[in-house]
Length: 264
Ligand SMILES: [Fe+2]
Image 1 (tube, rainbow, N blue to C red):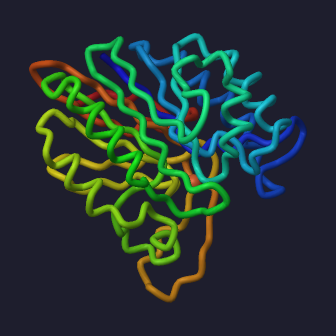
Image 2: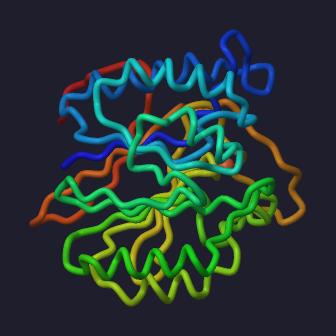
């Protein structure tokens, strides 16, 4: 199974730019074209939050229209820039989304089970999973504790070393970590939010954050650094699952680059 991951696509109303400078809508279109052009077609695309920038219905209308070009099935989870009810309304035909409350769900139609955890806190930029969410997570994982499983959530649960980002991570994660650690079939926890690729061993599994289709948040490890973002090579992730080999997560850069060259 090949699972593509796009994150933080920050769609704007048609004709408007992200941060006033970046055509995030066109870049989502480019990302879709990139996935269609891969030499192996992904079986599934995960969009791990911040589908739009301000949570407005006209942004969601653009997002749904652009994603309409995607010929691969896709799953969505919200991020801190999403508005939960506008999100739910926009993706009304995504019948896996619960009708009310946080958008936790489980998809069990593939060789890898996808457990989606809504880490958003309405009106806030940091993430948190409350007691009810953790209860849902434990019981969902207990339903099938042998099948390879990927957990997706927008906010990474770890301190990255980029101080201005860390304020907005998923906080109070001790119980979440304990729940995940009690299962041995979690292949990875896949996140977005930080607009950079990062990996960390956590809760007995691997946490992996997805690079961005639009802008990169600057990699600054000085605790006093001011927040900045830049244009960088847009990218997505391709998570290749094989029962014998496990899950291998590749970063896939979007765009045309010189080559190919001879291998040796
Ligand atoms: Fe985010």
